Picture 1 (cartoon, rainbow, N blue to C red):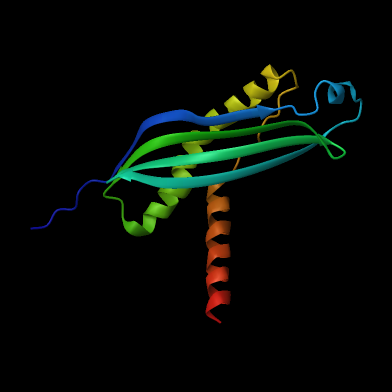
Picture 2 (cartoon, helix red, strand yellow):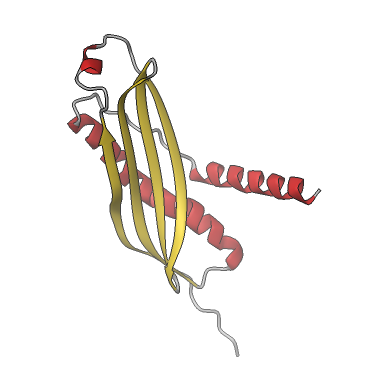
Length: 151
């Protein structure tokens, strides 16, 4: 008589893995009156650590510029260690690509806003992210890329 084992999904730890702040054109750029442009890039990555344990990281890069000069650049990587066991293979992508980033992202948002404020600027609040939609777009893009290379 075979019994399926109960799925396990537990947060082991959430931590700030990497953080950098650059103000390469200070103090002169701080005297500018022009509103800077803001560019925000996000990424998600997952790495197996040991059997059933994964590190999932969400990375944000926030760059503000006036013209072609950088006002500030913040790069932050918030990570978490998750125990994920007995989850069907077809559901692993969603767990790692959606559930884990949704847990980590609020910590990243807070750390980025705090860093920018401590640097002497008004905080930049990262928008809420629909990781489900982001994951589905990535899956669709990967499927289209695979289809194009097989032709």
